[in-house]
Length: 632
Image (cartoon, rainbow, N blue to C red):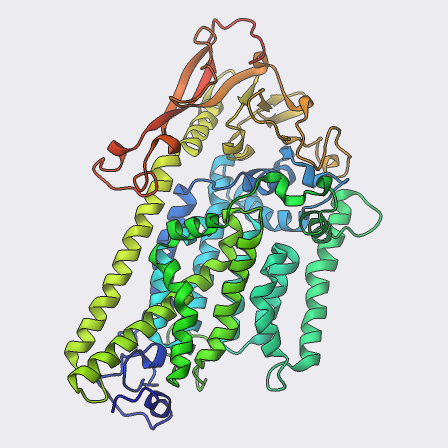
């Protein structure tokens, strides 16, 4: 009666009119008994609208609260977006026509919501910044719901609901969903592409994979290789169908962006920026042969620590999901198909009705193996950045849900064997299983929310202070004549969207961003030349070796505002109080002086704050009596 092999046979048996197990779903039916293939009513499954509403709460909160996690987002994407929409911004060496490593096609895609906010809605620059993030967060919420419902369709309600809960609360998904980065574009492509594959729309899945690889990040390729191999089957697209999709993708994601970049970079021939990117980072052509390693290397434990912080127990479950699926294959389990809730559900999508459940080995080949070997590939590289793993986050949540669902099904089977229950688990067993599942969701969600809260409360100072600076200058009767100056805190600058417009020779222009000499010895960005010639002119003093450029630095006498972080352990002297007065300050976590886990997770009522050490992130204003100054 407890033979797990009966699950596959039971899924093909005539369905009962009504069953106490009609709610039981998941891997292997989510129980030791058969899984019902009856359509799930509104009371039995979350509707598209309900799922979307829940996700929007978290994604829009991230848009307003999440700190910018990587300076690459600011200088390689937000600054070019500001330049093409406002005519000013900072230029990195990757955007020099001499190197051309970044595509303006992606910049123009991000510029669409910015133009909507500015032109149609009349928003100021700060609100435009948050509108862009909100737009990305809303897109992510829609794609996540589509993905979760596809998972529910092919692997069962419980697996789909676990995936939905894990993705909703995960701290990694929280801040990655609103990042203006190619890694987030890859995450979107993974969500839509794998949802399409699960729905049987393999061509759409390959299109999304092509988008991720050709316009996002080439390391996304291993994620879609098994999907491509499955598409080669005669019962799927076949060889000629795959070639057709590949040809269309090359035109859409290589030829057209190359033409856009040809115009922006001012060349007479198409510019394939992704090819230049691969030559520099993979084949070490340029950069003195060091490639991406110029920008720092990390030990293999770097990604393990990041995944544990962002996903806690879910990261462990995802890593053991392959083993769990092999056990399911040995027991001949199959994931039963689950039709969508009802024909009146606005989120109802075709492709689920009459579909067959996914065998464990297909899930292992298409989902778990790509996740595992892509993670291994990133871990083996010397140069590591947290954002690289963003494309893996949806599959990590899916893999963790599969492992949890299999563990719950095994638990029900073991209890059934020990208690000599009938083929279906008893109500007590079901209640116990549900309590375990709820405890898992609540526990991992609490840790994730605590992590997200720590990111906000510990590192919120830059966004809050620059916003205050923006509105203070906008409201001033006499705008300052100098610029906003940064030294060692250059990498926390949130973008020119936080620099107010002030009168210039040719009308309004963004308040200048100036660099002061500091302990940083790499190459800093320089201002773009006036629009529209700044994208095609060869800027002076640019190099691809991350060498310090002395021409970037200004004198302190050119500054009207000064931004810096004051820590108890730092060597740099504070600004001269005879010249500078504090305008605004916020607490900022001193990570080196704060112990784990209090620095990584936030607890209310001052529990974590009492155990951490904080510095002061401040903006100084030039005092009215401030006279001539020297270089700082």
